[in-house]
Image 1 (tube, helix red, strand yellow):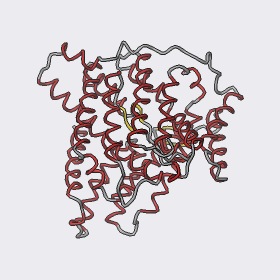
Image 2: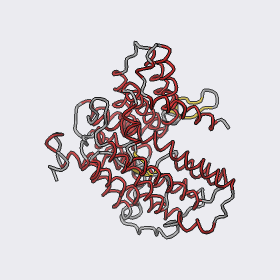
Image 3: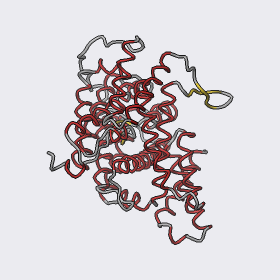
Image 4: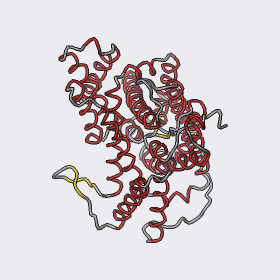
Amino acid sequence: MKGYFQFDRWKTSYKQESIAGLTTFLSMAYILFVNPLILADAGMDEGAVFTATALSAAIGTLIMGIIARYPIALAPGMGLNAFFAYTVVLGIGVEWQLALFGVLLSGIIFIFITLLGIREKIINAIPAQLKYAVAAGIGLFIAFVGLLNAGIVVPDESTAVTLGNMTSPTTLLACFGLIVTAVLMVLGLKGGIFYGLVITAIAGVVTGLIGLPDAVVGSVPSLAPTFGSAFTILGEVEWTSQLIVQMIIVVLTFLFVDFFDTAGTLFAVANQAGYVKDNKLPRAGRALLSDSTATSIGAVLGTSTTTAFIESSSGVAAGGRTGFTSVVTAGLFLLSMFFSPLLVVVTEQVTAPALIIVGVLMASSLRLIEWDKLEVAIPAFLTVIAMPLTYSIATGIALGFIFYPITMILKGKSKEVHPVMYVLFIVFILYFGFLGE
């Protein structure tokens, strides 16, 4: 086991990897409850979606850990589940079963282009400067999410966002957790983020801000209401030309958002873990295949697109360096189906400090960007700033990738731009055109 995951090379241990896997799990455990709530708005059975969420996360993360050997976890993605429920089902009027078929089809297409090496070639064609910007932008994005979850930053009609109520008990709990986690990290304690989570959760329970679970073990909800619905719906649908066009748009959107969200997340977390060398992501094909396979499996089980989670960076920050971290996280997702009542102590305020600290760590890649070269600085800055301000990783990537060829051409460096970047330039222009319709 140690030899397969190369513990000696990465100077890690079972204890360190286990703590990292648990930290990643705790940082993303919210998806077990948020995803069912969102998809329930689309008419899906909440219990079945809970089980599908846990299973798809476990299977996808296990594949990532064993096949790709990366400390990266997968689960149904935030944003994509909202698009599934509120745009596809409630907005366009597509039945949720047919929407699941769209997710399945996007996953199958992903598998195909991954096996052909197309995804890996695109990722390796992206210049290092933009990759650093993507990593930093995701860091700011995840920190922004943490600040919102903590209640430190809140929406405001006049200024978009503003300072929250700092006397709110739950916000004070998050602030306490942030201080504790920061102290542990500054002191160089291995697993400081994980221990910060534990201390914050205990403080929440002791102060009565977080309730104790009613039970330790709960029954596993049945998958029957959603399992295989992506297939059974096909024989019941009347395929009009309008529906076909709508489904093409749906599938392409799932493809687009998942492709670049996953690409950005994979590079950001892998770079943080020290895997990226010479602007190349080793075993990128395996990592991408893990992601696309998980999406297909999740659709069959009954959930929206499964993708790599940026919260994996909290596990890396806690010391995770190998695929064994993902194996531990996958095991915990399986256990979560039986011990789901215990997860009530992992609230947004408990995980918020971890997300903020992770944002600090990921933003460190800003120092690698050549800010004195405007042809690089402008697209990099737009990539970084757009992610938190538009609340979209994909939008930040799109803006940066549109401006990069333009600034490079104006600087007389058009030959330094990979042909793939020109193709992406056109794709992103069309994407924004589609959004504007």
